[in-house]
Image (cartoon, rainbow, N blue to C red):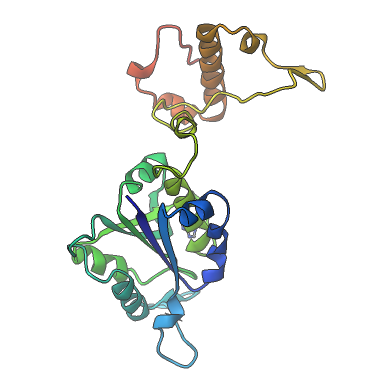
Length: 251
Ligand code: ADE
């Protein structure tokens, strides 16, 4: 399986970071087929205009549906039911979207194709997602959190990184993908420690040196429960009681 990811943006250089690190290596290894497109290639006038003032008035600019329509038709060519297309998802980063979580990443990692439409300014004309949904595409308008960025590019990088590391072969050690925070356990991951055991007057918990795997697992789980309760009480409230064991303390 080789996931294809297309990103359309007016700042293609913003996405150059995807050449680096883990995702860069996954591209080189042929695990991800990632292509970046400049939206302005589908503009028609001399100034390559992609936006206009909002209908009804107000501040800022809105990205034009006609330019986005031509761009996405070209990039999505073949349509949702094209032979061999597999599952294609049109992903639109927007602060007005549903919140992107690890569950969303796990779901989108199962897609065959992602087409990411990065909007700037006050967003993309809202008929664009409606049009592609009506044509049968799976359209996901997603927010990476309750804050406003200048555009979708930084959010797209975040989401693509979270998705890509779940693809088979991208992360060297699959166990590190399974054990981390926000996985199915519903708790933050336990704290991480390494050598030296004593550092600047701070000693690592002795239990970690005991070699007693059951005791170590218990101590780590207690620590994970305590930090989750302190930092993310919302996650403690959302815990499925069936995932708790008899020794767990959540208060
Ligand atoms: N574009 C601007 N802010 C955003 C956010 N928080 N998430 C996704 N896309 C965005």
